[in-house]
Image 1 (cartoon, rainbow, N blue to C red):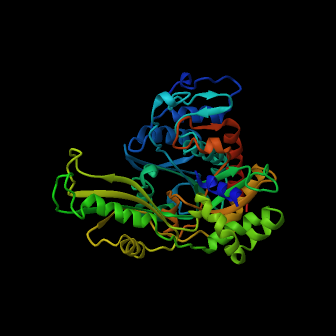
Image 2 (image 1 turned 90 degrees about the vertical axis):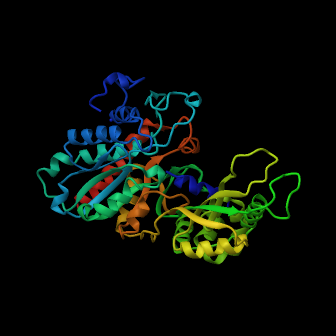
Amino acid sequence: MKKIRTILLLSAAIIAATHTASSITGTDDSVSYSAELLSRYISYESVTGNEREAGEFLSDLAREKGLIVEILTDEIDRYNFTASLYPLELGKPNIILLNHIDVVPPGDFAEWKHPPFSGKIEDGFVWGRGAIDNKGMAVMQLLALSEFAEKASQVDYPFNVTILSVSGEETGGHTGSRIIVSDYLEMLNPVVLYGEGGSGLPGLLAGNPEKMVFGISVAHKRTLWLRLAINSETSGHGAVPPDAYAVQEKINALNNLYGRKKGVYFSETTYNMFRELGKLESGFRGFALRNIRFFKPLVMPSIRKEEIVYSLVTNTITVTAVNTPPGPPNQIPQSVTAVLDCRLLPGIETEDFLKKIERIMDNEGIIIEVINEGVMANPSPLNDHYQKIEKAIKEAYHSSGVIPVIMPASNDNNFFRAKGVPSYGILPVFLETELLESIHNVNERIPVEMLDRGTDAYLSLIRQYLYK
């Protein structure tokens, strides 16, 4: 079962006229056009809250490519726009290609091989923050869709196809997708959405480790961030500790959470994931995966040992901060807070989860505050829309395998799922584990070859809708 843990790495997941050619560092005549565009796009430092300049570059480029651009909101911290084959006001059924403009902070510049916003092209890679998450995908989508722009001006295709570029994804989507589904969903008229999610990796199959397997996310665990606070009026000198005080009580409560018995939930989505993986696997392992409903008692000990896989069938609780008021080492704090990052499986109600936490902590003095709560959404079906992206992946990457997955992290797709829009997450590139681990880390980079292969996948996907 150790090979299964790599599934989640599939989840792990997952350009401006004012910039001159000199900003494309380390390039020569052989560099692909997609790499040049991504290099320029990366050079805009669009850390969450500062998306506008990068968004204007991308929207201007879309206009140059013949796409019809609609600026939905244009504040510096919530620049959201669409780029479409047809005007949105025509009301055509719409295929949405979602990406986000914002990136996470780069961290320590000194730890990067190349400056994080240089867009350096070297050794077959485009380097920089956002190369994978999520600017590379935007370039692929734009180049693919622009191939149909001229023909769309002459032909009445059955669908509109729209790139939707949003802000604020990295901090919960409140300045991007949440606004879109609240104020612009009717205008978009989406029939399906394809956003970020899994990717492709080798080594998933014990019987054929070289085979590329892609994971398409059809569901996400949702975020629930909590702040736990407790106040306790006791004596204040550390030399004479009372029987119970705030820090001690909080430690006991958190220890109860850590030692809790985790409930295991196998949903239909989970069964589908293991079943499809089993179809690609050989021997008894493949048989067990295909029939995991009956083999759960046999495989659960192995699953429990694999943290990533275990997170697919359990609700997780991670303590990310414990804080007390400032004071000297010999002063007993009268209050203490802790922050929990909880990730809930589809179908788990917040109220039920909070009641369970209260029961486990066994301390009526702890006050629970919800800091942030992701939207609840049902998994997307394995229907014709899923089959189209599956086919597109297989056409771009011959002999590859494709499986539906549930993602342990959250992204903007869930906003649309919650509104009944079938939503599928996939970055259509094949990445070694080292590259996936560069996401939100230093030395983020994407192979130039993958930009072109990913563009091919989007071309195949769009053709399937336009040439029915």
